[in-house]
Image (cartoon, rainbow, N blue to C red; front, side, top):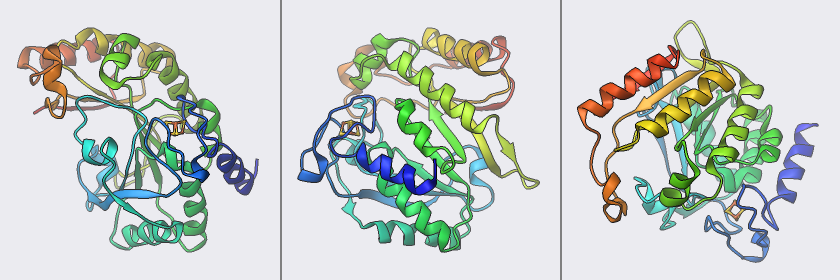
Length: 292
Ligand code: SF4
C-alpha cells in the first residue's frame, strides 16, 4: 500500500475511532471523545531533547521526544498522569508538528521519539510525510504501551523505524487492575509480534545509535517477579532470545498507586537481583538493566 493510502486509511479509522484495541467507535471529528479522552484536535504536552531513554536512542545529544496528551491506558501508577489522564497540554496544528520534528533534528536529536501517540496516528503520519519532504532524515521511534491494534500497526509499516514498546503485564488480571484494560496479554503479544515482523532486531550504526529494530521494556513492579517471568518467556520463546530487552526497576508509587497496597512501595534489592536472574535464565542477553 502506498504511503498516501495508509494515511487515508488511518483517517478512516479516526472517526468513528477504531485506532486502538478499545474500539470506542466515537465520532471524534464531531467532538466526541473516547476512553483515551482525545477528540478531534492534536495536542501535545511538550517536546524536548530527552536523555531518559536507552543508550542507543540517546547518543551524545538525546532523543527528540514529543509527549502527546491523552492515553488509552489508565495506569494507576502513571508518572505522566498530568497529560495522559488529566489531559493537560496545548493544541497544535499538523504544521506545528512538522516544525517541531525539524527543530528537534536541527538541535541534533538522535531520532524523533513519539511518546504514546496511538490516538493521533493519522495526524502524525501525515506530519511525518510532510517533514520527510522537507528534509527530516532521523529514525522514527514509536514509544508505546504495547496495547495496540495489529491492523493499525500494519498501516505504520514504513513510517516507524524503531518500536520501543512496553510489555507491562504477564497477566490480564494485572492489566485490568492497574491499567483498566481487558486482554492486555493477548493484545500486546499480537502487537509486539507484528512490530518484530516489521523491524526485526535492533540495528545500530558505527556510533552506537539505533537505526532500526525492536526494544521491549518491562517495568518491574513490587511483587512482580511472576509477571516478569511471563513476559521474558514470551520474548525469548515467541520472538527471539536476541531481542533487546530493557528491564526497568525504578518503579515509584505515584498518582493512585497508594490505593493498591501491593504496589505501594519501591522495588527491593532482593527483587531486583531475582529479576536479573529471571532475565538471564530466559536466555536473553541483549539489552539493559536499570536500577534505582
Ligand atoms: S484511540 Fe481513543 S477514542 Fe480511539 S478507540 Fe482508542 S481509546 Fe477509543
